[in-house]
Image (cartoon, rainbow, N blue to C red):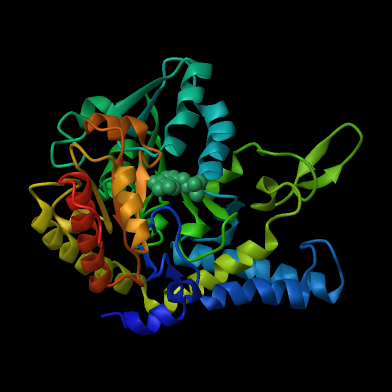
Length: 414
Ligand code: PMP
């Protein structure tokens, strides 16, 4: 059991008021709040040892380099990577996936090849592959979804077949919360010699993840969704796959020897990090990982399972009015509850909730085709993290009741 009240004290923003009410922050799938230790790590860097990395012989530069590389080591250990050479810093999940699309895919996907995705991909793991498929004459195939919001694997042996070159799948859906069987799908992909990319934007922040156990080639995630700063993301690439990849961006830091005519490449992973990296935010992500490790990722997951079950039960009070989207079984669901009302626009629900200090996301959640396939143009989404409480779920339900009284039944808010 987490000591949530003590955890909440570590997050300065949680003590603020919004529209006269204590903030109830339920938009964690968009971005998480930051504990003081992460904020302080940024201040410490800028006040104490701000310098460029991998360049100087002076003390500040060596201190900055040590902390920056220490953060990379922390990321590697956190996700079970065998070596920190497999960890490439990017800006976010989107950039991590694009890096694979602009490097590995250019060399390894050709005419007639197939790329397998699910129908619940975030645009970040759909749009880059649309371009690769168009440019290369490859075909995208989709694993369909069942009525209970999980992947329909009944035809998987024909979808993942010897023409498949890449299986690129979301670990946990940001719109409906489904946890996909990525380990099983990786095994199927490996049987036909395909590479596997996992979009872990919504899994790494919320549950234990072990990339070596999963056996994937690529794994992408963002620091800002896991208590870290914005502007820092991670691409894990299996060491032998990375060794054969061409650099993405070219310039300073990523080279070993340069002549006027030619250049040779630096060691891994610097080969993939041209220019001055985001030093402060990488160090900040290291501090976020320290914080999560102190709590324990299984404890984070257990707390969210409990809270999601509590929320699903609480939503039963509104089952005649709201339609919920996502698996009913919390064992295959992250801490995400998406819903809509047949007549009330989610933005209207979100606005009433905001007037009570409750932050939820409304819209298509960057999964336009998925949300459309649910028969709506938008949903409202509450997403939980380690600092959320059952009382906050009650406030959400209370806010929704008031919004529905007003919009669906014409009773003005008190
Ligand atoms: N994939 C998933 C599943 C996500 O939830 C998100 C963020 N909503 C992304 C990719 C993109 O992350 P970022 O905006 O940090 O690049």
